[in-house]
Length: 226
Image (cartoon, rainbow, N blue to C red; front, side):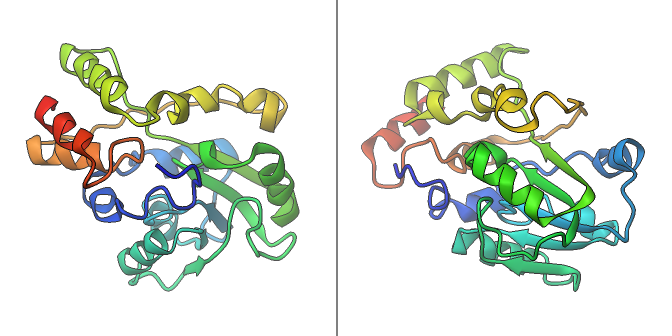
């Protein structure tokens, strides 16, 4: 498994598009309420991946620059969001977006910040934000112990994951106050739900970068266990 976060999902894009959850419908209303989001704001979606995080803001009328270093994921976003003229696809990283200084009202990162270098991305976000701009980081956080099924699924990931324990985002997000916001932030939660049959569950599992790749004998054992 590559340690380069910009390459980890290259062989999982189709499963990612088909089986990863989207974000809660209340995300945009919450941001209107909490930070005053309006449709005229220019948004930089950092680590925009397949476009799931950009779509709610495009539907809100925002211009969105989707900054994504992985070519396969960037192409998937361009296909998904082809009907939105306000979507601007950018080959860049969190640490080097290529966007002009002071050009955006809002920086977002959906399911992505745990792959960034906190210090370098902080400096870059400051550079591209307008003086009164905002940063919003969000994740879909899977419950791990609220049912017998979820407990066993978590055990499966620990047992078969290539580096699951090291890269799971809840381990890295705990560092946000120290490494990024300096304590000046608020943490909010919204409910979200994803309903899956077995094929969907399998696809959701295989979309994760910490599971064995195709051709690895460990993958067959993991799917038998699933």
